Image 1 (cartoon, rainbow, N blue to C red):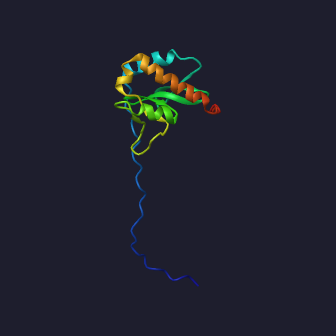
Image 2 (image 1 turned 120 degrees about the horizontal axis):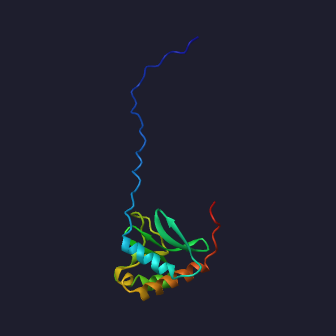
Image 3 (image 1 turned 90 degrees about the horizontal axis):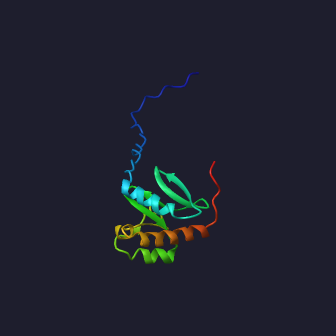
Length: 139
């Protein structure tokens, strides 16, 4: 015996939440790219690579510095990071709102202007990254 037909009820259709459009990163300023390449070019035992289209530098597969949009970032251990964050304009790196990269800080303009000061912080960043366990190379 056929099953009785049910009257169709009008239920609201569930709609999927629309995905936000992918974030379009701003290009790094050419002068900053030039400074980055010059200063990291002076370092030894680094692996230059690009991430999200920006130049970065790695040690044993661990990123220790890079460019992101309008700034340079470096990775520091907690003690150095505490000291660094006291500099005017320095702040924890936040690539997207609410997404902090806890060991990374944005290099303030005053440090970018003094090559010896920038180099000192890059050296500290590189030394720290060298103490981290090596990462396996991606295929």
